[in-house]
Amino acid sequence: MQRIDENTYIGETLVTCAEYQLFIDEMRKQGYSSREKYYQPDHWTSLHFHEGQAREPILGVRHLDAEKYCGWLTRRESKSWRYRLPTQKES
Image 1 (tube, rainbow, N blue to C red):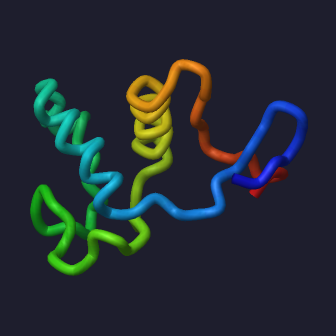
Image 2 (image 1 turned 90 degrees about the vertical axis):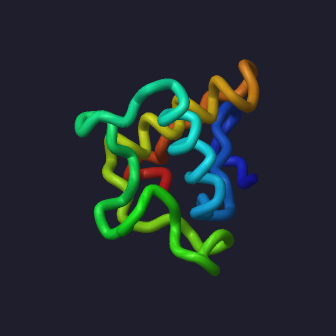
């Protein structure tokens, strides 16, 4: 991670399809599979990323879905870190 300021760090790697798939799968297990809770990128033709793309960066994620992913990651990984999208100034 790269330090931006005293309290903020930014990841140096992109989220992979496999990492994002964990989020999608957990949301589906919790019953969030209705149209308003559809987290797959629009270009996916199924509920999973295409074979051979596990380590590729996730593309085509809606802004709101990316924010939901950050909230999920915060709850899943650690209560001491808060994940969020970078601001324009930070990116």
